[in-house]
Amino acid sequence: MTDVPHFDLPFRFSSPSAAVVEQDSLEEIANCVYAVLVCPLGFRVELPSFGLADPTFSMPHPDLDELRDVVETWEERAGVLLDEHADAFDALISRVGVNVQARTEA
Image (cartoon, rainbow, N blue to C red; front, side):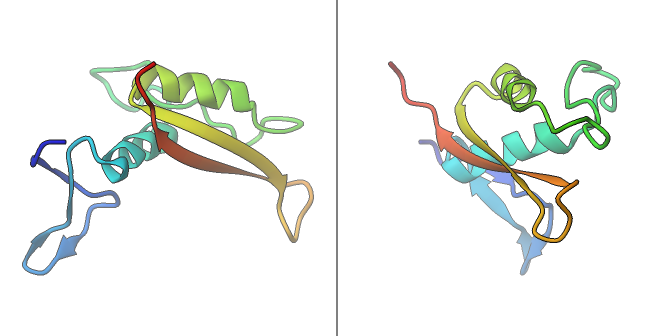
């Protein structure tokens, strides 16, 4: 690991400066996965294929393989475990849990 700081996500101030994480740390890799998953497809003009198509009304449930493919395309350092389950109060709502691990060299 290097000693290069990156802004932490979500961006916030940690007295007296911005909160940062170390480059190539698990926290920084998880931040990059988060950025990929919350960025709408086409939002970044310079990279129109970056991000995720809006899964809000995907039926019958979110496509976990598509989520995994998007993460693997844009964040090669991450290995993700995806878990889908129904919301505790509304069975029509699917929740997807994302567990990020640093990918090991094989």
